[in-house]
Amino acid sequence: MSTTDFSGVDTALANEPLDCLAVAPHPDDAELCCGGLLAALSARGYRVGILDLSRGELASQGTVEQRAGEAEVAAELLGLVHRDNLGLPDGGIDGRDAEQLRLLVSALRALRPELVLAPYERARHPDHEQAAELTRRAVFNAGLRRYEAAQLPAFRPRALLHYEMRVELTAPSFVVDISAHAETKRAAIEAHASQIRADPGAAVATAGGQRVGTLVSSSSTLGLVDARDRRYGAMIGAAHGEPYWSREVLAVDDPLALFRATPGPAALFPGGR
Ligand SMILES: [Zn+2]
Image (cartoon, rainbow, N blue to C red; front, side):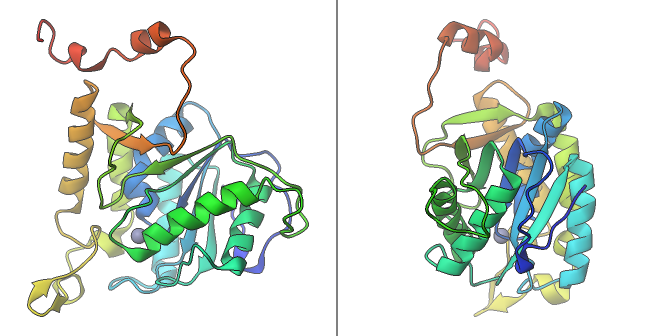
């Protein structure tokens, strides 16, 4: 697995373009929200990577060094060929910041991913919403010949898909069957031990007597992720699924071939209506 420190902006082109790059605000978000798809694509032989935007230095638990080590372990488990950290400020990801945009465009032009995954545009954490906006603009600007970024040639990814975080997708464009990769996803999430460890001193921070914390710092994280994946899986007749949303309408060439390849809930309830 190769890594590049983009905080200094690496201007070298990657040897081979990536097939898929997940952009994640913090070092565990990709595992939690699109880890199943990343594992599935890796298993099919695609070149898959994660670009974490920040090092997660504001997290209640774990040091930046611990988190980087955990991210590396998770990357190995998911079969990634690449993982980087853009080094943007945790808590300060800004979709309208010109310098952050230029850094992300540089990374996209260097890694040349065909498919980009990013958070859904509506989220609980401001960093997650800003990451969605920043990625959408970066995917567009990366393709503009006259937009200058690290002297790299223009490159436009083929598609941008958004993954669900805390706020449900209003209408998923599709659900991917990740049943065969649910265990790998779970292991990759568990690799972030500093974030899911039951640590009453840090995890159960309270504000006005109310529990606060992120999804990952909750002791029931794995159960919540499993419940979400099972719910979306049930919608397509699979044990586990992950939903994705595309701003653009997706074209289908042959509806019959599509439906034959994905039998849907009828397979789960044979004879049912
Ligand atoms: Zn996050």
